[in-house]
Image (cartoon, rainbow, N blue to C red):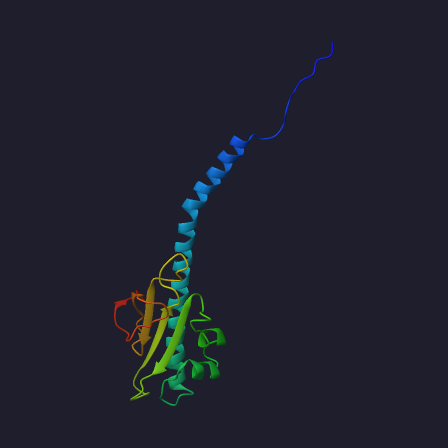
Length: 162
């Protein structure tokens, strides 16, 4: 008795297509959530950085600044903020945000403005949807981003829970 079985092993094309379709569905669900999580993390980092600059401004005014507030370069020189934060720009954002700090031009002893502007505010590559600002009062405010790397003009808007 010589019986041969014509058995083929492996996956059929239909089985492979079903697996690829399932992976595609899972990716379509997961990727938007991943991007939203990244934007939320960038915004959290920006808020923390604005608070760091606010603390650095108070320290600078009380010590090195001799009563006056400083810009990011001065805060970096005094060792109060790191170079990544002080050198952020549209071409080189820190966690998707561009930071700026400047004393009041008319009276550097009275006030300053710190801003964090999202490098990209819309689309799949958005780094955040809100901009942040703070001044000598120490309250961090937010406003919806309206254009790439455009900072808030003043520390007004919706305060963030401190």
